[in-house]
Length: 225
Image: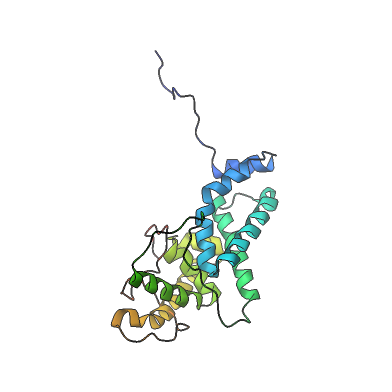
């Protein structure tokens, strides 16, 4: 009779840190597994930070290539996922800064998910509202947009967002507050039914009719500052 242990013989999955160390030690599959675990969330952050599918894909590819090369320099001072998100967000911000001379920001068409399959059909009104929200978010200053994407869209706690962006928690709170205020002005018409205002003004809203909820997005864990 067997007592104790796992009769299947299967051990626990390696942690992110163990996978990164295995990659540094020459395991050719370890980094691929690390990417598989986190790619959907990294893609979501990139897409909503940069606002364009092709640019987001390029930003993620550049970021993962940088992470692959820099793995040996990872000191374990933060979680591996925080480190990966920091590299992705910085890659997106670099691309945004390079195109700041252009007055408009292309928006994702929403026709596909990160995996390449079609998204479920949404009611026309909800779809139109989501496009308006995305347009307003895309018009925010890059730093405010990145903070809002992490906190309100992806559901990171302020302390986690601060680690990812490499700034103080107070800076994250300030950027979120300013970004939500700008969004509230841009999306005021969703609440009161008036004509759309200038989307460059910006504000904190949900994908519905209220102009007081969080910015919509997948993976929201409900953590708020």
